[in-house]
Length: 412
Image (cartoon, helix red, strand yellow):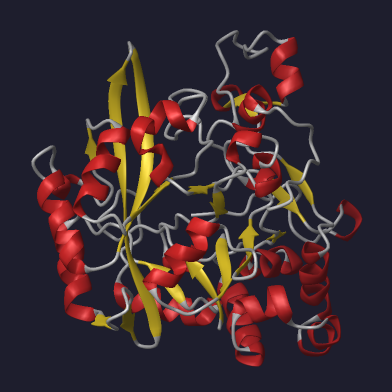
C-alpha cells in the first residue's frame, strides 16, 4: 500500500513546542494532512512515554495505532562531546521496534544523563558510543543522523560536525544506512557527495506544532510494518520508497551564510569574497548548508546518482492560501479556507500532490488553485534563509501580489 510517513517530530515535553503536541492532536492533524505513519518523537521522556503507552494500541508488527493513525517509536538525542580536541554537537534520531526495547534504551541512557530534562535530552555521549549502546540492545533499531547539514547541531555541521560519516560513527558506521537531509538541503544537494550514495536519504518535518507535521515527509509503497520499512530503508529500495516530500531548501533557515544581527545574507561566493566575515560588522558569519555542501562535494551541481530516490518540492497548503489571500497564515480566514479545501478533497496531500489541475481549478478559488499549480511546477521566488532566519518565499510576483512584499510565513 502507498502511504506517507513523517518519522521526526517532538512532543509537548520538548523546548519551544506547542502544548498541542500530544497523541490526540497528532492523530487529528495526520488525518487532515494525509499522513498514515507518524513518528512519536521523544520516547526518552518519561511523561511522554507514559502517554504513548496509555494511548497507543500495539499492532504486533512493530507499529502502534491511535484512531486510525499508525505510530512508530522514535526519539532524538543531542550529543555534545569532545573528541581529538574539538567539540562536536550531533543530533541523532533513534527508531525502536517496541516499547520493551525503548525501556531498555531509556534505562541505559538514564545512567549517562538526565532524560527528564527535555524531550530531546542532551548527553555528553560520543555518537559512536550512542550507536553501540542502541545496537547492542537491539540490532533491529535504526539510528538516523538528523538534519545532517545544520551548522550548529549535525554530523556535517559547519560549526560542530565532521567531514565524513566514518569519523563520527567509527566502527558503527556500517550499521548506519539512512540520513535525514533537513529543511535547508534537498536530495539534489546531497547527491553531490559520492560518499553518501550508499545511504537512503529521508525527509521529516522535525515539527514543533501539529500543523507543521508533514512539511517534509516520505512516500512508501510497501507493507505497513516495522520490519518491512526498515528493510526498505536499509536496501534503498526504489520500488518501495517512491519519493520524499521536500521544502524548497532555500526556505530553510540555514541555507545561505550570513549574520542575522546585521541582516546580512551571503551566497557562498559572497562569503568567500568577504573572507568569511560580515561586511557590516566584520564578525565571522554563520556558514550555511549550501556553502558546507560546496566544501565537501566531489561532484558538480545537477549530478544525479543512478540509485537515487526521487523527490518533490512543496509548500504547505496554509502558506499557499495565506499568500493567495494576502493574509497572515494564522488568520481565521486562512483557516476557514484551509478547512473548506480539505472538506472537498479529503486531505492536504491530495490537494498539493495528487489532484488534477482541472479539479483544483474547479473546486478551489482560482488564485489558490493557481498557487498550488505554481508550487508543483517550481515557479516560486525565494530569498534564501540564513543564520537562523527562514527564507522568504513568494508564489506570486509583485504585480499580482496581494500580500505585503516579502511577507515571511512562519514555519513553526
